[in-house]
Image 1 (cartoon, rainbow, N blue to C red):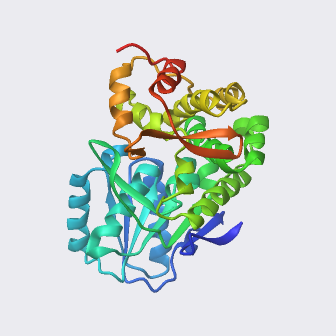
Image 2 (spheres, one colour; image 1 turned 90 degrees about the horizontal axis):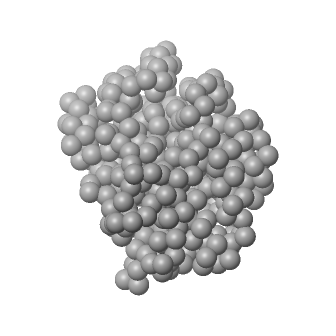
Length: 343
């Protein structure tokens, strides 16, 4: 893929041994934000490359997962940036998964009213979704209720990092890649249906990013078709909060629910087929132990509600999404299909 622009602003690099392409060599400071584990190892590799180029770096480790996406962490990180001398000429580098890039991007968008941010995603989920498109957010009460639209300057995707992922993390990202195929690339869906986790990673990443780039370029601030990228997320976000599912697994279950709703509302003929692909990727298709009332309460807080009620992204067919009002009876059926019933 080389390098391309997303949203007219973000340069996306996909390759191997490509960390040096993260910077120009003229940055006065790289403030690297990361998390524990593999992300931390990749962050140290970024710093080694930057040090060899004579750049000044500072490193801060944020809490793991969604614990990074809080206003308390934002405040603490902003204070640290001031302490290490971050100015508008410096660059924040977010190295990690989707939660880390969300948090780093939000901090960068509000610190000094905005400083440059670049990402090195260390999970497939971040590479195909969270790091692309310029959405940043933290969680307050509900999922991603406080956020900004702010493109990163650059996203560098190191295939060697992603190819070393354990199978559960690979499956996480495949959930978002599958979503991209469902809403915008039937050929990507067919690849995942045929090859599952054995699908060629570079092609999956390129195709998923192409879907997101095309939609984001047309509708950066989600006044129209960008909502299509939320397929499976209305129910999925609720399951993240209630069942403690990781984002990719929650979205997988959410896509099953959205498939059932699509079947009822639009006559979508492939709900069972999609569910089989989700299962073949090693992802869940149901969620036990969550009460219907609790699920409905969080779904009703979703940002995609309007005065007429809940609006969900549905499919008319693979590659043809629509946004539609969903009656309560349809939502009940969708929740029941994923194991959520009763009060």
